[in-house]
Length: 638
Image 1 (tube, rainbow, N blue to C red):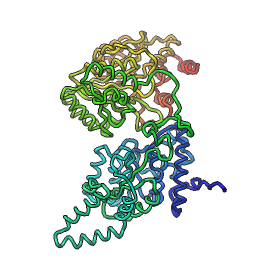
Image 2: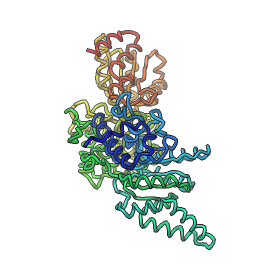
Image 3: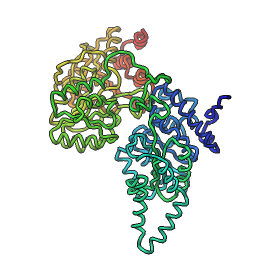
Image 4: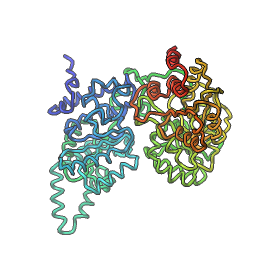
């Protein structure tokens, strides 16, 4: 029997799906799934979520007319099948690589990505914006939002639904329920009912019944009776109360069901519709089906065995060091509790949960709630540690200001993924927390230069009981220093001298300290003596240390893994206030560039940012006015 022709090779855009038979679309879906598995095995990335929406993505692109119809993905890591079907399959093996495809939807990448998404729960708000823009322009294109993978746990999604429902906006929201947390069992009867209630004949009968019921005063009771009858049969009463016409739940992997129901939903014109589809995360790849958490985001892996590429042995990750340090502190203090927002594995709080299940709280994708929840616990005498990625903490900033800082509540923020994060790109880089937390009165801000310092900062935060505090640390492994077994708390607002010199001072805040020391070696090779200091604190500043460095050196460089307006700016403001800039001091502030850097290998990204040892040494020579930059280049190559 001859092998099947690979139909996916003939699909260069969604237009190539039009007019295909269901059997052909099923084959294309199978081939897309194989392509996703094979590509991610080479690049690493998000696997389980994408595998769960293969049939759904094929069906949507088959039924709707993208890009004129707007397809907006929430939590953009489920978009790999979408990228394959929208002219990017030849580049799919460049996912998350330097110069390659983003791991999320990205407007600059394709007209089929109308809205970028990497954080959760934005799709319905954005979709309503598209729908209103369409209405104002008197166009008739459709708007489809695919939300799921935990994104319905965030309040923003419900704010948008409430607005769209009360406004009567014509749009389709597809709820991808991939953890069975909402859906009742999906079977033949629910499929039949979903087809029925989304059909033109049912909707016509419903409209006719309304015209009869209204004159005799039964419109409202009839509406409620019909609504609750459908809610009883299929679920979804909550969505109906928000103003959405609910259809579902249906099997999100069955194209024989998906296609006609989507056609029916496309034909609806009477306000927002919510289509509830149930999918399986990791569908079609057994290792991912059996371990959805481990295959949410993966390293490169063997397709046959599912075994992920192990990192080479080395120092423990900063994340694990934080978790183990917090566990040790919690054994001594039963008021310590852990909080995270849907990232227990990513923040190491899963380890804390194993030790203290009653003292660990995962609040879902709800950073705002996480911050205020922590504030409430702190107000009642607990010692909450809110472990949240820097990029996600941005979402809870208003709560940090109003619910934590103004009330001087001792919430401890463990800020993971500080600095650049490589393959996840600009949406996940921890660039801004130094500036936005450092602006808050009373906040204590720390950054760990190595894993031993991180252990000390955990201890320090435990002892700070009259103010909020935060300590930041990068993604990846530590530098290999010994960890203190009985860590002492740091003196608040005091840094340390790591290496003494005379001409040049490098004041580092955070994990670029090792690069600063390498730069000092490069400078020493030219006879340029260099002091290297670890600031430890951005707030309060170690003003005595800064004054000493400014007074005793010709050049002062500040160094940080954050955006402009952070530690360097704080240092400059202090030096200006004390008149230290009036005496000829040459100062340079080194920080992340004023751009959103695309994904690449972290070392290459830091070199591009000018925060590697070679760049640091070159800036010092440029400021000093003597020395050989070419010799720095030769030293770096050697």
